[in-house]
Amino acid sequence: MSLAAAASQGFLSPSGVEIAFVLVGIATLGAAVVSVTTKQLVHAALWLVVALGGLAVEYLLLTAEFIAWVQVLIYVGSVVVLLLFGLMLTKAPIGRSPDADSGNRWAALAVAVAAAATLVTVVIDAFRSTWLDLDGAVQGSAEVTGISLFRHWVLPFEALSVLLLAALVGAIVLSRINRGRER
Amino acid sequence: MNDVLDVLLRLVAVLVAFLVLPLLVGQTEHKVMAHMQGRLGPMYAGGFHGWAQLVADGVKFAQKEDVVPTGADRRIFQLAPAIALLPYLVVLIVIPVGPNGFVGQIVDAGLFFVLAVMGVGVLGALMAGWASANKFSLLGGLRTAAQLMAYELPMLLAAASVAMAAGTLSLPGIVHAFHWWWVPWQIIGALVFFTAGLAELQRPPFDMPVADSEIIFGAYTEYTGLRFALFLLAEYAGIVVLCVLTTVLFLGGWHGPWSDSLGWVWTLLKSALLAFVVIWLRVSYPRLREDQLQKLAWTALIPLALVQIALTGVVKVVIQ
Image (cartoon, rainbow over the protein chains, first blue to last red):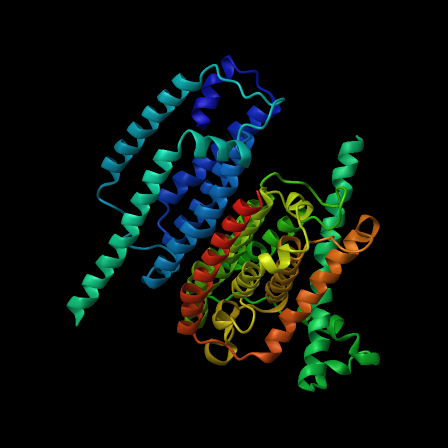
């Protein structure tokens, strides 16, 4: 996203919000890169907090207030806590982990670059000349998000909830099977 | 220029409240506990009723050496108290105290904002627990994480019930929509919210993560001096935030006689009453065991919160 904004300064007027957007984007990108390259496992999780928080700020700058708070609540408040909980159960040492490197890193890099290139191209192509109307009703407020979610997107929403329920049931079944074998 | 001044004044007011209210709760806790348990210790310092005990505590903390263990992860160890404390300051900005804009800043999805930012504070305890390089700290961190994951859900569900009843996520909007009969209507949600909040703050009887008779002081075992005091301050700031939030969501905030001029007094009075209950619970109840803690959250609080949501939905449809 930061690259997209940086590349498009030619046809966007560089106002304060856009400059802030790019700067936060660069910081987010940096935190994300550090979180996958650092050799210290717990530091990686904490850099992830910075990256996810930066993303929330980007949502805010795009006036998507509701999504921003959900991002903080779910990702920073719950997913990262879960990650840290998992890490504490392992023998992650303080300092560098000797086996924190993966042999797949070049393949992973290729996939990451390809995914980023696709997304950036698609997003730029889709929203090239779209402007947010800041004078009207706020586009990303809880009310607008709720109306569009439960009026136009209610079927995908319900389908997703069924998917999550299936995942939940699956997790319980899997953990039960393992316990049965131990006995 | 006037706008800037207005924002600055509001922020300064929030900062002052953040610096004063937690200390007030701390002082009250000293005194209430001393009376309830017949403790003489906190009644000496300064003469009358031991008024200087809190000052003495502060001086004591400031004098102590700030030790970082050799094996610890230095930077994270030192950063953790700030991460634990600052979210509560940020939360106070959006909490409405009185009617007619007596609030730091109105946020459209204020309820979400408050719950999201409060969840961040727990990262501080986790960082402290891991970075201390101490097995008791690690155990404390693990218990903190497990407890947070168990109690975050009932808290969110109970808050969602109020948002449904009010039809808005904005905190001043919720207080505006309040009527007296909301108290019996939302009473289950209120109890679930308050209990889950206590558990998130790790206050007794939910203080398993810092159980001093088993794991010394949990995640904070290795901390000394001012950094330790900051963690304690975070706990009291958390009490303030929880009590004010419960007041705003479930007890009608500034509603009361002469609420137009004295609204803020009502908010503070109700919050102070809740803070007293928090302290009272600490003195009265023994600590829950870890499995009891988890069981309470998953088998009692979450079903109760769901019942409350169903009840809210039914009543809401009927009265429309």
